[in-house]
Image (cartoon, rainbow over all chains, first blue to last red):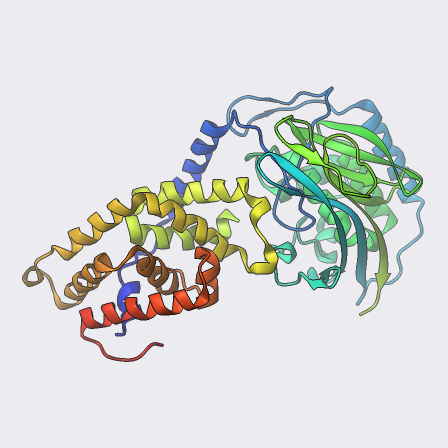
Length: 305
Length: 152
């Protein structure tokens, strides 16, 4: 036995009970920290996060992880349903085998300290294989991000690693579909399931919306109209009027930006409505709305390897 | 993230400060990582070494507990235990005699399984410092167990 093996022999394998107790301790510790305002950093891929609050909405919690749901604004529900109608009438998608989805996104992302967030430009290009559920390419300008945590995908298929097979397995009924999507993201933790779902859907759209059939796009939009805590923000990017549908959780929210003319998702944003972080605009960049600490819009195309 | 990394971090922390303290420290590690996620730079490496770095920093507050636990093992009378356990006593004694940095480096390498560069990233120290600390630490362990093979 060599020295490293001798050291390793001192380390016992943690028990399942120990792992469970650790998770419990996280929730206990987090409850103690609850009065602190949460600061959010947007994530284009991967690590969960999010953001904002619609001033008109309040989310009540009844203890750790229990949400008393707040109804969505009627205009948000109507908008999702009208975009579902547009999606249903959209052009068919023919290429389903061997295709890749290219998403080129541009925008601003905050580089944050505990008290401030400096907005900086963010330009990314990604290629996603929806058949295998794999990220084929992820670049930030000249920097290859593939292999970093930004490109991390869970091992199992699902909303965070969408595949054609997973999409096909989803129910068609809007309520059953919403239930399935909610189940796919997990349970209430620091964030409500609907907040996690909205964030995950933003990522999902960034991966592969262009590969979805018109009926599937429509089914998803109609199901998402049942998500709680939604509101609408109007914005203009490069002269194009867009709408951001925001899911609010406490003082933070996540936004998916849609083109109301087509019903396609064209971007994501995170907003922080608290006052503990100063957001510093990007020098020379377009001014973002108050509280927006991350906003990108994308163009998505289908390509072959 | 928890499902993926909790067990690894628990194994490392439990070895150092025992199960009860380890659970608190690993819980704090995940909360700290979440709160400081803006500091994580994916271009500098994977997530796990970064988590080990946070965990190791938190462990420093429990240095006395760690030394106490190692000395408790080291105080076991060799005549009272079988040979394999006796070797554990020798190793614990050697670990207790290491400097904090040497112990951090050795356990991140041996228990956590980090490569030299990952240890350097986790602790925020130069690669050369990792090499030298690891070399000295392993020499101490080898001397303790009477083993003379080179580094693997």
